[in-house]
Image 1 (cartoon, rainbow, N blue to C red):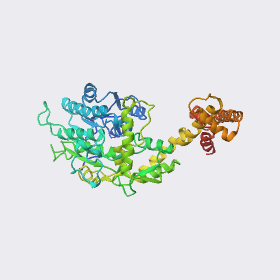
Image 2 (image 1 turned 90 degrees about the vertical axis):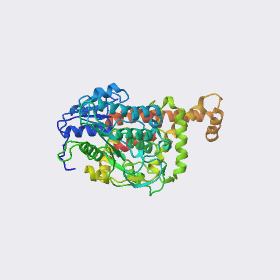
Image 3 (image 1 turned 135 degrees about the vertical axis):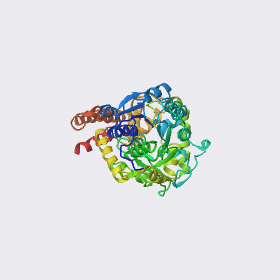
Image 4 (image 1 turned 60 degrees about the vertical axis):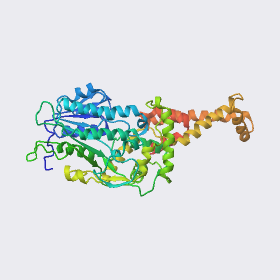
Amino acid sequence: MHLSENEGIEGNTFLVTGGLGFVGAALCLELVRRGARQVRSLDLRTTSPWSDHLRKSGVHCIKGDVIRKKDVERASRGADCVFHLASYGMSGKEMLQYGRVDEVNINGTCHVLEACFEHEIRRLIYVSTYNVVFGGKEIVSGNETLPYFPLDDHVDSYGRSKSIAEQLVLKSNGRPFKEKKGKCLHTCALRPAAIYGPGEERHLPRIIHLAQLGLVPFRIGEVSVLTDWVYVDNLVLALILASMGLLDDIPGKEGKPVAAGQPYFISDGSPVNSFEFLCPLLRSLEYDMPKASLAVPHALLLGKFFSAVYTIMYPWLSKWWLPQPLILPAEVYKVGVTHYFSPLKAKQELGFIPMVSPQEGMAKTISYWQERKRRALDGPTIYEWLFCVLGMDALFCAAYLPDIGPVPLLRAMALFFLRSLWAVRVLFLLSAAAHVGEAVYAWRLAKRVDPANARGWFWQTFALGMFSLRFLLKRAAK
């Protein structure tokens, strides 16, 4: 396409579903920058890390849920183009909330389509996923001619629901409006790779949190396994170009949008092993990379175990206190089986060329996470937590509790080393006093070097003693 950089944007009104999310917010800001008359964000949330910036930039933030038809119709009235980014169930516990996944990804997409026809909106860009064609079988430099992965063979509801939704969107392309004769809805779908960048809120926070706790003990699959990633700015550029590719009033090409009815794979164009890709980030944060390797079949068994356990806990999946599962079967395939795709079609038809290289993108992501770590409460691994907390509990039980349950065994073990109950009690009191003293010292030190987290440092050091204090002392030394 040979268009101006703001073709179809200046003077137009846009709706972005999921507009308070990571990609949605970046897209809204780019549309504003390019001169859109009005940009609307439809999101279930009222606040996000980007909401204040969006409002200050002039984005109209609308609270609503795509599963409610009235919310979608209200937000889309008068729009010229819709970017449908809202989805659910991409990773972690969300994957197992099957009802909500289908409601958002399938029913929500139907409501967006109906609103487009109701208000005669001529452009709809749908953000899909690689998973519509990938389900665990190796794909090397795939392209858009690949068939959809069989619906019944998907191991997760997210891939299945996104596949159904994408097909609904693409099959709606060219459907004529009732009132505007000769006018119709033009649709296309983008299939982005794993998204990264400063502020990404799905993949990286979970990976980094697990690494901090020491819960990334192994890498999955061979070193030769390759997958795609896409930097957020590159994806936003692809979305903008896709909206231009649906224009049907380009001189000489009236009524024949180049992107109409088409899917496009979007990536940085540099397949890489996911563990190698994340290695610079984790090392910059001083977290250990896994040295052991786990074969995909064994990782699948582990994933199925967590899937079964969390399925039993289905009523509590949305609760904050339930941690994310270590890994699920679909996630095993994502990191353990080669699947990457050629962005050639997007380049030829949309003019898509990644503007940010993987090296530049990762450098920006590292800077963001280093600053975030500097402002956050740091701490030891889960193994140190267990050792310290369980050790203090065991010492208290051995020193003071009556002979019930496992107490006699704990007391016998303590007496084997300390020879008398009096010595056990003295050791516990000295240890507790040390914890209290270290906690008070941590609070006073944190007031000087990290005042925003002073209370957190107090309670963490109260529980862990020197295991926590050493992190604060290291920060103070810097």
